[in-house]
Length: 393
Image (cartoon, rainbow, N blue to C red):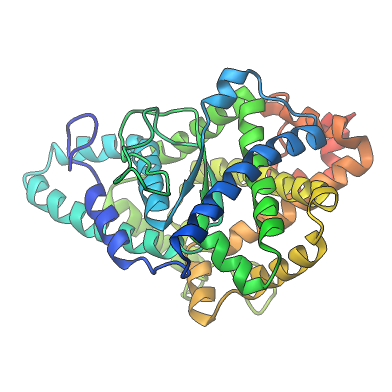
């Protein structure tokens, strides 16, 4: 498969989708009538959640047209895979261009490039097959531009079918993964209607964040592209960096973001292959993602008691599920894929948001959305008072 610019791509994206679709586990058993009812209810809850979130946060979309341009899609697991492949193709373009330039000077680039793209396509497909069973909902910041949907496979198709692209960057879209929502509500043994609305409140908060703050998407995209532009595609340079890291660690095997005997956080594999500039960018991205995730958790719990009767039971059971993971393999994969870091973002960000709101109220907190300069730093996420002292008053 070729990229939008006509050169070789890093990943055979069609093969990635085919691999993920073949490997993905089936969702929970439901009748067609039950599946149709779930899809319809999620669409209703998404609309209902939008108004609840706006009323609680005081955030409004900058324009009705912009809000309408960020659709809510109800997808199955293969649909989630297709949507994310389209997003990946959009976001990794700077890296593709660097590889294209490097291959142009290599005599073996054609053969090795084709083999590498197919191997990476299989790897990406296997990864997406695993992740597609874990995600309840997702605001896809880097969704391709419209048209974002393919024609349904049949007039009776239940789920939205995202296009693979590439059409270039678009305004974003919200995905709700219906089979996973049903799976978790059954596993937790909670009220289905309450759980579905509770999930929609969290995901709709993300949609509101991006539609009400016009500069936010461009800011994050700029940071991600800067991070990718700093990536060194020279294998020799990468090997040197790994050797330096091994020497710094005294010959010990790098950790995966856990804690060593001293109690200090061990060096993660991702951190080892980063340049100093990338670490700085990643620090800023970590802070803003912690803010977004924590804010969504706070809104979900703030709105919940008024509109979700069993919210206390849902929160308790869901948090227990988050903490323990599904099984030992699941715990290992969560660490390898950085999903543990994602859980810390929920926790750290929620502590920050609550700390700021306690000091200056929701209106004072909303100053965080004024500009990139008012976003919390990585240090301020752990010190709400410092952000209030700098911005919040």
